[in-house]
Length: 127
Image 1 (cartoon, rainbow, N blue to C red):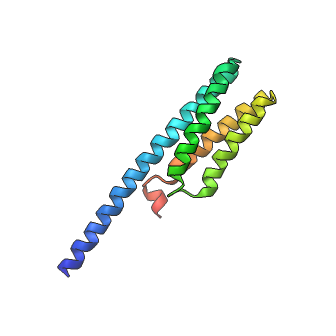
Image 2: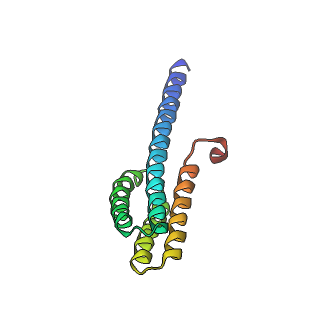
Image 3: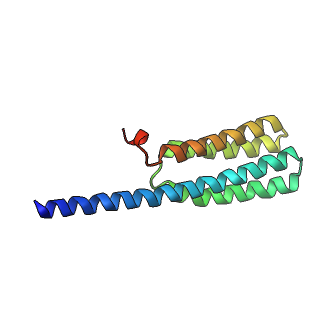
């Protein structure tokens, strides 16, 4: 009985530790992408096309790196929503549809916040 108790305790500690690590990783990734989306929105509102294109390229590069890491433990449907938003933002900006681009930037931020909240370790997500 004592041996089983120790094994169960070790397993629970490992699970909680990994969850904390993954939660921090998810939060850092989503925060970084949200900041870039906010910078793109600011450059779109200021009509600074040079900065806008630079930030879009940075967003795509950063998202690809983060996506590869997040794909190990987050549902791919959730990640595809962010992928779609990024592609739509680029398309809308290339075609000069600023209101749609801003709306899609906000959609991307919302989905990232949803991912962060969905994988947070709390009682609401457990039960």
